[in-house]
Image 1 (cartoon, rainbow, N blue to C red):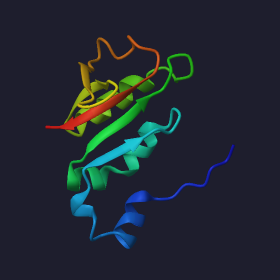
Image 2: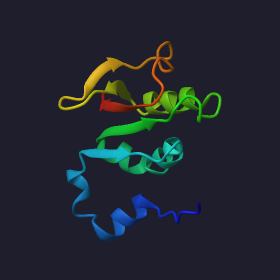
Image 3: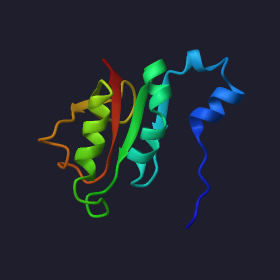
Image 4: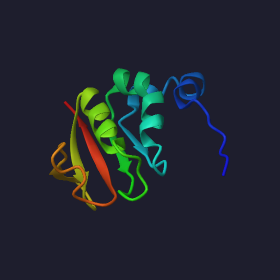
Length: 113
């Protein structure tokens, strides 16, 4: 299925620049393309340091090395990564290279350091 893409950073800067200082949370759920989406959001992430929630796609449907790239990228942005548990405060088990494949599919709650 083809889905039109839009540059979220440019859109928000053009249409809602006044609200960007209040940006506190970004959730990405792109069915295995979360890394590509987060990469386009780096200017917003670096400028505003919001909390992030990102999907780690199922093991069977992910490309080899994808999880490592996603987790490494998020850590490289200066985030502490936790498995997103249901309900506040969403901060479950710490995600590391050693346990990132322990679960099939899950969300990661990213806390700015």
